[in-house]
Image 1: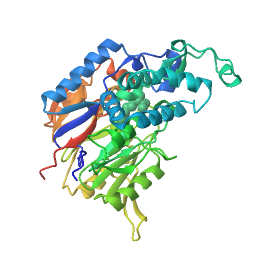
Image 2: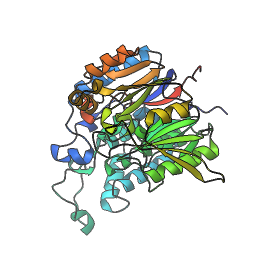
Image 3: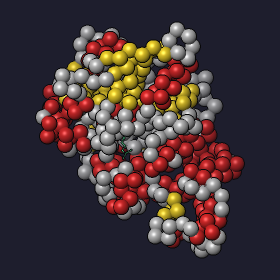
Image 4: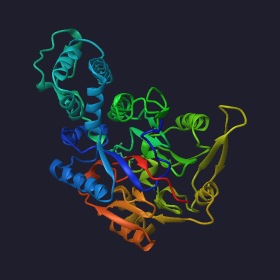
Length: 413
Ligand SMILES: NC(=O)NCCC[C@H](N)C(=O)O
């Protein structure tokens, strides 16, 4: 059986990608909610949608099939039937804090009365208290904070489809994410994988499912080639989750090397792909802010140990050397965000200047606002397709974060 997922690199010609068009969820909150929802500002929805459509059109114009998360989720529920829909809704309510009780019942009746498409969109947008014809009477529901507007929070980070799951080879990881604001997101990916006719029973490997305590997010998972991965040890991905997925990849897949790269644990650099991406066979973007004064950074090259389930770890501090060894390259080109200028690099990294999406070897999609980094990429021989970015960038993610590649062509060399 041929898996519908085929993603053996960061740079092979992109054939199919999963996106989420920003909807009401990106403006359905107040400034006080922003830190908890991992946003630094509230985007202006009509412009964000225009920008996102421009991004999707740029991909389509370059031969990419664009799939949408909300559509696939609804189709998966349609295909799964009543039982699957009921299970999905129960799980979503449980993970939203309502496993049972009168609010659970009221939400279930409200959402359950919708068709699958409307229900999925409504869950993504969030459910405000004033939408329900419900008067709290019992102790538990009366104890709810009356001043808080929502029963179910919006999920504004959904347009960063990179993070809740990551396609690796012919399978994927469905991620247990770090912050409550994003933890429910991967339930959509799990439902699609299990029940959408395109993915269900088609030989898709799940390298790691979402039922874990340890944390991993797709922005940290970089598929460098058909046997080497790089994974960020970051604010969002823990070392034990990396070791866990490495064991599964080594045991059941064709991967034999995982390079764990430790980056600063902060919001500006929450994932490895906000500071480091692969853009050609031998070219990478790198934010100078992750390197020490002598250019050093902690890496651990993980390979299978002698006995099954054991791992070998080799610690290094020279990223260039580590990548050259793992990828069998004589040399490589690390291109510094903002041309290495501390002010420009800081500004452009903040606006995802390092977060490039390669759609073929040497061809990248970037935000137009990062003009210094873009110019530098061109000087280094890359083809740069710029997309508009005033509103999308307020969510703190760029073209790589906004895309989940499902199929890429294999590399020629
Ligand atoms: N891969 C990425 O770096 N994704 C960007 C995620 C931004 C989102 N506001 C978050 O903090 O999770």
